[in-house]
Image 1: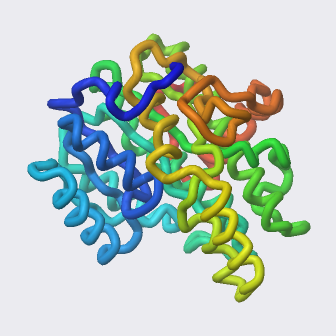
Image 2: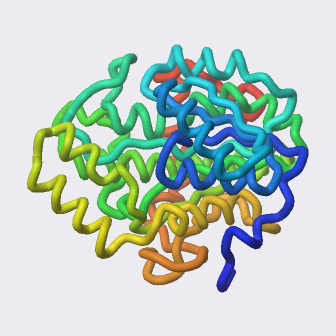
Length: 308
């Protein structure tokens, strides 16, 4: 992995990728570099204006890129179902579960779930399950879910997944990122049990300068915190281009192990992609199984092809 960068991405011609949250940040960079290597990329974004604008910008940067926008609001399961039902291709080589929200004031999704858990985990759980038949029919497909080193701040509370007892924005974020890793762990186990060659892996960007850091303080009207985040992004964070490298590695590099977690090499902060430390609770089989069952119940999306 040493020195791996976007120039090492293998040819992606003939492959199809879905990237959630592709209108900005590491999602946009991921979509752009996959398209640059020849993939047909579906930009799955909540805002039609921002998604369409990202598509225009991407084609300007990569002339001839095969990109298309499709609306997807991960905080609304009806939108997730509409996206999956309208999926226009007969193959899906790469599903990049990238979109997310961070440290927001308390709120709920359209379906009544705590916003961070509902968007970061349940939305992607439902999306992956609904697209699973196409993934299984595509040779050597991959599902890459973007987590965070912040998962180390908190394990999930299986009895309070929606933070109804007490809400702390950073704890809720950490729990949603732990949920991402438990999802990958259980998905990888089920795929292996069924003899599938689909690879489920996780990645994180380290500290990358995107609008994710400032969205929460801005929403809460916390101007000092918003300024603090902007200063951090300017002086300490790596670029979104660098932050996307672990995702791109997990999506395209040869021999990426199932249930792996790729991040920046230098203390998980910045640098070229490398295996990343993860909290032991993210490989807890019982917790992963319980979260899976709860997620199926909450979303009403069942992974029938991977029943155990």
